[in-house]
Structures are given as structure tokens and as C-alpha cells.
Image (cartoon, rainbow, N blue to C red; front, side, top):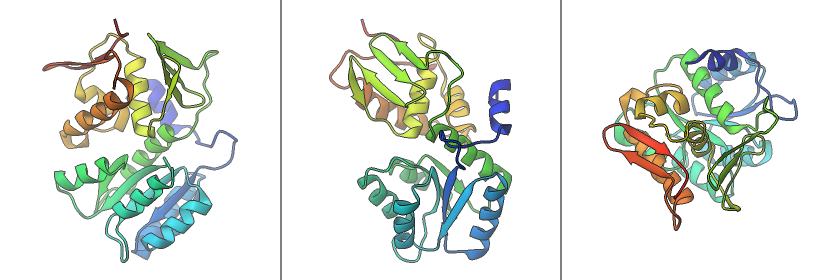
Length: 247
């Protein structure tokens, strides 16, 4: 973690309009939701909870959270179905899955379903809060300290204030994690970035060394950024990935 990242991790977090960050915690264990709610309110965030999937959907649609902590195993519909319905509603809210399952297949299933992070029970409360802070940083519109918040590489432009991305003038819709991955690539044009570097920067931890997570999200970006166009995202075999202007 860089010095700037460490400062960001300690700084109070807020929405772009200055109001508290909103988090929805979904789990059928009341003791756990109470514990998480207390920890997140200590961060200065506004928290709502739900004990089942259908309640979570109703609360999410009204509360419009900036992030959701979502248990996969719920008493009615599971967390994957909840996320699928939220995405179908057009929601791109960052989701951190919380579950007792710990196999790689379960992790990949959660992420490919549109989740942004994954924590297994039992977990460290400090680690979960740290990961959630990272997820919120990727999800909310931050106030840029630069005069020009737009990063440009070739015909690709990324606005750090509005979280809008354009290629050759055409707007491209990205999830919060896709946006953060693209931003990291665009801040380092023509530089080969290893999977370990990407995991550390985009997910703020090494995800147990599971580099397949990076491969999945690179493939998502390629479909959105490069599809039908000259490619900008390139694989350097055995080394990592780089982004450069199309010829």
C-alpha cells in the first residue's frame, strides 16, 4: 500500500454530497448484523439491515446504499438471486459477499455473478471493514484533487469525478470494480502490470493468490472496451497486462 492509499484508508469517507456513506447488511444471524452495524456506524456510516433476500431487495430499492454486505445463504432467496435482481433493476452498487463457503468455485461464482468482493466466515471484523472501505472507495464518486479529472489514453477517456468512460466518443458502462481496474491500467499506460500488482491495487489484498479473479475482470473489460475495435488491453505472457493506445 502506498502512502497515499494509507492516508485514504484513514480519512473519513462520505458521499459526494457530504452525506454519510450508506451500507446495507444482509444476514439472517442477528448477532452478526448487530456487530457489523455497530462497527460500520463507528465509521460514521448510515446502516440498514435485512434478515432475508426479499426484505433486502425492498430495503435496497428504497435506501439506495453505496455498498451491500450480502450473505449468500439466506432463508428465502439466496444472495446470488438477490444480486441478480438488483442488477436487473439497473443497480451497480458494490457488493461484498459474506458466507461460510470457502472454496475457489464458490468465490468465482460470487464474483462472476456481479459481486465485487468475498469474505468467508469466520472473519476478522477489522479485515471486513477494511475491504468494505476499499469497495466504497471504488463505488462512490470521489472529489478529485486534480484540475482535470479526465484520464486519456488514445481515444479512451475516463472521468474520475463522474465515473464516466468513453471510447471514441461512445460511452461505456462499467461496474465499480471494472472502473477501478481500468483506472489503474490507464494511470500506468504502456506499463506491464502483474496480476499481483492488480490484485493489491484493485482489491487491496491478494485474494488468496487466486489470479483467476484478475483474468475474469480483464475479460470483462476487453468485452466492453475492445469489442469491435482495435485492442488496447494486451496480455504479456508470463508477466501481466498493459494498456496502450490502439494503432
